Each structure stands twice: as structure tokens, then as C-alpha cells.
Amino acid sequence: MSRVELVLPAGDELCLRAAVKNGADAVYLGLSRFNARMMAENFNEKNIFSAVNYCHERGVKVYVAFNTLVKNKELEDYFKLINVAHSAGADAIIIQDPCFIPLLRQNFPDLKIHLSTQATTTNSYSIPKDIDRVILARELRYEEIKAISQKFPTEVFVHGALCFSYSGQCLFSSIAGGRSGNRGFCAQPCRKKYNNKYPLSTMDLCLLPKLPEIIEAGVAALKVEGRLRGPLYVATVARIYRKYIDAYYRGKFSIEKKDIEDLMVVFNRGFTTGFAFNDNVVDSKRPMNRGLFLGTLKDGRLKLRADLKVGDGVAIWIDDDVRGYKVEKILKDGAEVGQAFAGDEVEIGARGASDGSPVYKTSSVDIKLELGDEIKPVVPSVRRRKITLPSFQVVGNNSRIMIFAKTYASEMAIAADRAGADVVYYDVLKEDCGRVKDSMRKSRFFVYTPRILSDKQVIEIAEKISQIKPQGVLVGNRGLLPFLKGVEIHLDYSFNCFNDVDLNCYPGIPIISPELNFRETISLKNKRFIVMVHGDIILMTSRQKLKVRELVDESGRRFRVRSNHGVTEILNSKQLGLFNKARDYLRAGIKYFYIDVEKDVDKFVRIYRKILNFEPFDDRKIRKGYTTGHFSRGVL
Image (tube, rainbow, N blue to C red; front, side):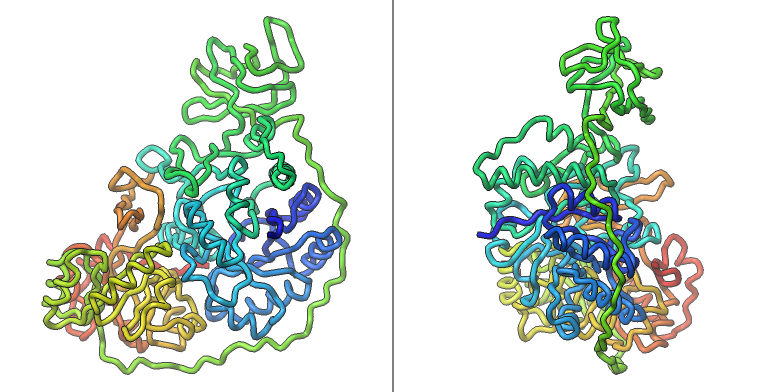
């Protein structure tokens, strides 16, 4: 078995030097566009050549991230930038959209392709055959990681920040804030306050104690998150994980307390071993770096839980305020000392903090930043390459106008049918699914499936579909696609269909991504897709359970929370309601319209039927309280 690879983040040149110097086998980085960390400094079309050369001279591989969704008008620039990375000698690229794989193989046959965690890979059936490595969703159980790693080369995150939502399935920042996580501009709504706490704020992943199990699961690579973190963080994490990976292979794996403490000092929001080993990854106290806990103040004194030196940085948490400073004096038994140890009672200057205030060490004079040599400039030389992209022909939709209604209870499904929905979607896992199918009079009956599926669930749902024999399936997870033969397929917007490549890649008819605005949507050459015009937009899909029914942010917006077959869904604070604007899509040749509401589905089917028939309808009053989503604004 090959030795596992340690992959470190390089958000800029200093971080790259830190990673290489301290033991990375590979680094991953982004260029000026199309990477999921656009707010990092990143690299450009010139210094990427120097960076790759620097790494290769030291035996380190370079993976370049192109892991965002791409609009139609950007496709040419996207592939041109990949040519820059390829020309620079990148060892692999990381992509979000699996539909790009055939085009990449055609244009760059020798370039290795890694499928990003942004692709939400939760089962082996959703992994494209022609992929070199898959970066698994961070929500997988250990047994799931192990099973998939026996079949495919896998990469798993072992350290750093976690997302509350499955990566690639988060629209919160986009819909509620106008900055798309799928486009590299996440505004981190999971770190905001809701219900006067931080219920979506995840702890930081730390799988150092679990390294033997993770390596023995057969994974190809261990990945550290942190392209927005500094070089000291990168250097420290690299050094410590390198140390214990090597120790494992020597048969001497035993973690020293100081190494865990150093990891905590450089950055942590509390450590968790993640969903691979437990069920809770959130800490609602505060969404910020804690550092290493030193103890709580009592009468201006601090009984140390860890060692402290003059020059170390500390932070005192006082209610909602955090006061950080460098320790200039330590008093022990009234005498000034340069260092104190765990168990000592000291005074360090309480800064007005009251009894019970926690104190953390946030920097250490003992943690040194070791950087490798400076990166020498290399003259860039981009290969002249004819990039062949498909020439998409206009595919019109000659169908009649159709309304597709997602329903959540049998009475709503029947009501949608009686109101004239063309297709009724119903939950495949509902016990009464077969009876609801038999009750349809006018509508075609489709089942819909969960967005998140394990290998076992894929097989179970595929079998259930074959038993129910619906007229079609609204598919939520691409792992089901190989099992659906002889049945009409629609795709949930969890597929993130964003461009004509996607529309000509997947079987069936997709609900187009709600992140595209009106102009971007109608510019798609293939018009055979469904557009969402009304209902609840799912902002987050998470494995984390929440005990509340709604989240109220500091501006008073209310986001409903629901549980869906063990998965938590957070819905937008306002339902989408395009009403008469839906006619604009119709005028552009789009004929399929999607409604997703839990109640009054028959009412909205009738309203939109009237609107789409161009019957007189004044929507000025009814549209109050609704949002038009990205219809006008879109995302960057």
C-alpha cells in the first residue's frame, strides 16, 4: 500500500513556502478566478509558474483548484486558465462540476483530475469512472470513508474549518447575502448569530488522534483546510501532521500533549473529530479562534491549565467582548517570573475582567515560523493550445406549458392533481407513496428522492422506485442515475446545473440552478429545463441536527428549519414568488415551471396556471412578503 499523502493549503507564497518547508507532500492553491477561496491572496498567471517550479524542485506536488460553478459566458476563460495551470506543470486540477471531465480529457489528456468536496460525493455510485481522485464529503462516517476508499482513490479532510452545510449544497450566502459559496465568495452566514447564539458555527476538525484509523481506511491523501489562514498556521499544522504520519509508518504513534496544544494555539474554534466519529460538530458559544484554554479568572488570578511565557499572546473573554494582548509580566507568589507552568497560580493583568472570565493563549513565543527559501521567479511560458469546446445549438422546447409541483403530504398531492398540476412529485420514502400514485386523476406521478444518500440508501431507494413504478423521478443525488432505466428523469437543483455543458451532460430535465439570474438563464442554448418560480428555497442541507424550528438572525429574518429523513434543511426567510415575472421566462421559450410549497399547493398551481395562460392577474398585493431571489440580481 502506498504511503498516504499530506496535502497542505497555500493561499499565498508565504503559506506555500511554509507548507513545503514543514513536510507537505503536496499543496493546493487557487488562481485569480474560479476557485472556492476567492478572498485568499491566491496566485496569478505569472507566479504560478514559479510556485510549481519551486515545489517540484523539492519533490512536492501542486494541485490547482478550479472548484466553482461556471457560467456559460465564462467557459472559454475557465478552460484557458486551466491551460495556464497545465502549462505551469500542475500535477492535478480540482473541479466541482463532474460534467467538465470529458472536455478536460479531450483538451488535456495527461492532466490528472480531482473531484472537489464541492461535488458533494457521499456514495461510490456518484463517482465518475474517469476521475483520478475524489475528495469526499466531510460528513461521511468512518465506515463510509473506508468502503469508498477500497474502490476509488480518495482524499479526506483531517484538519481545519468545517462547513455547516454539505459543500456544494449551500445557497445561504448566495440567496440571503448575494455572495455565492459555489462561486468562491462565501460570506460565512454559519458564523452569524441566530436566536442570540451561534447554532451553525462548527468547531474545527482535528483528526490527529485518529490518524491510524484514517490511514488504515485506505485513503490516498490527508488534506488540511486553510487557504485563508496564515503561514504560521500552515507551518505548524504541516510540521505536526508530518511528524505523526511518519511516526505511524515507523510503528511508534503516540501523541505528545504539546503538539495538540500548539495546534490549538495557532487556530481552533474547539476541536472535533467530525462526523466520521461523532454526531455533533457545532459549538454555539462564539465563531472565533479560541486558542489554548489557560483557565478562568478568580480574584484577578489565574490557575494555569497550560504553560505560559512572557511574550505569549492571550485573550480574555468578557461577556461578548474579547480582549487580546501580549503578556508583558507574570507574577507568581508576588514575584515576577519569565515563565509559569500548568498548575501555577499567577497574575497576568486582568484588564478589568470579572471572576469566571475564561482566558486563552492565542500565540506562543515557542512556536516559530520556519519558511523555506524564497521562491525564485520563473519566466512563464503558456502553451499554445487549441481548446476545443462544444458548439451548442439552440434546443427549443416545443412542449406545452407545464407546472411541476413538489408535495409533502398525500392530501397536498391529491390537491395538486385536482388543481391541474402536470406533474406531482411525492416523497419516495413515504409509506403511502403507492396509494398516492393510484389516486392521481390528471397529473403524472413522479417520486422525489433525498439529496444525500449513502451506498446502502442508493440501493434501497432504487429498489423502492422499481417497486412503485412511478412515471418519473425527481433525482436529488447523482448516485441514483445509473439505476434509473426506462423512467423519465428530472434533476433537483442540488445538481447545480449552471451552463450548457451541464444541460447536455446529464440525462433528463434539470431544475436550473436558482443562483442564475433571468438573463443568464434565458441565455442557455438548451431550453429544456425547469425553472423554479415559487416556494421554499433550501439554503442549507446538513448532517448536523438542530433542536429549533427556526433561526432568527439579528435583523429579524426567520429561517425555517426542518428535518428530512435525518438530514437538516434550512429554508430561506422568504418564499420565492415570481408571479407575473414568470411570463418573462415563457416569452423566452422556457415552458417548465416548478413550485415547492408545503401548504396551499393547489392555490399556487391555479395562480400560476392563470399567469402562464396570460389571463388577467394583478399580482401587486399577493407578491408582498415574497422574494424574487436572483431573478434580477444574480451572483458574481
